[in-house]
Structure formats: structure tokens, C-alpha cells
Image (cartoon, rainbow, N blue to C red; front, side):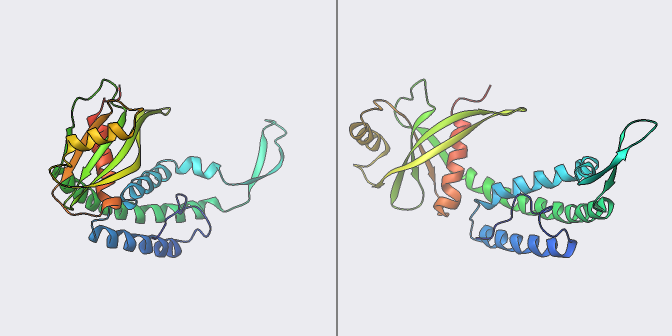
Length: 237
């Protein structure tokens, strides 16, 4: 799997043609994955790369100040320090901005393509509670059912994170077991079996997440199911 480092624009050789090659090689792998309906990790990576490129474009003046300088001395009249720039920052900044201007529409295009895939699969995916949902539904089980003969059980825990600007919820999942579909293994019976096997959760929140599509499980269905789960449980205030 191709990987595009978070600081790919400014690390190593800052050369427009070289960065073009790096980006286009990465996007070629993204396109191959999307053609196979494999959304992750590329879809979330594209979001971060797009945000980073936007920040660089919006903060070009601050970027100039970040280049290394050599202290020459102090101005006799103002007593302010005087510096010599060790790098021709103007030329480098123009090169970086050229890379950014080239990359932004590319990221936008593939983000739109990924969003189309995401929206289509989400429209074919339903979530429903299994049994009584307790007041605290930040942890429990999800029963994942796609167009295969199995139901995949994962435990989940949702945690609230706070940044300087926002609050958001992150979901952590762990594989528990697999059940073959059948009358004896409907969602209610699976939940009963889980309660018998795992005593510390007498009434866990349990949700069934189903799709009628056959899509890559780890790369697409599970990540989308997790996002649907987060939107279903208690919202962030």
C-alpha cells in the first residue's frame, strides 16, 4: 500500500516535478483502491492531506518566518536584531505554493469520488438496536451483517475527545466472534449468548448494522459501520 507522509510537501527535496511524481504515484494507488470499493485508509488520509495543503496556502507568510536565519548583530539605532536568511525563502515558498496549487484540485477530485462511494454504501446500510439499550450506550457490541453468511461481532467503546477548537467522539472496536446466520443465530440470540459468555456486561448496548452490499469488510464496511454507530449514540454537546 502506497503511503504519502503527512509532511510530504515540505520534507526532503522541495522540487515541483519530484513532488508531482510522488503525488501522482500515491493517487494512482488511491484510484485502484476506490475501483475495488476500498475506502480506508485512503479516504481519511485524503481528508488530512487536503487540510494540510489548505493550511500551507493560507499561512504562506508565517512559513517564510520559519526558515532558518543567521544572527548578524544588532541595529545601532533601533537595537533590534538583524538576520541573514540562510535559504532563499522566496524561491522555495514559490515552489511549495506551486506544489500546493497542483495538489489541491487532485485531492478535491478524489475526495469527491470517495464521498460518492461512502454515501452509496451508507444509503444501503441500516443500524437498529438489539433488545433494550441501556442509558450508557458508550460501550457494548455491534453485530455486523453484510451479504455474506456470517454475522461478525465486535465490542466497541466510544470516548469523547476535546481539542482547542472542538469536541469529537472516537470509537474503538475489538473483534469478539463470528456467528453463522440462521434461526438460532438471530441478533437477539447472539446477544443472549454474549451476555452468558461475558459476565461483566449484564446488559450491554447492542446494535445490528446491516448492508445488502458485498463490499470489502475491513477497508469499507467496518469503518463505515463505526461512523454510523458514532452518529447513532448520544451526540456531542
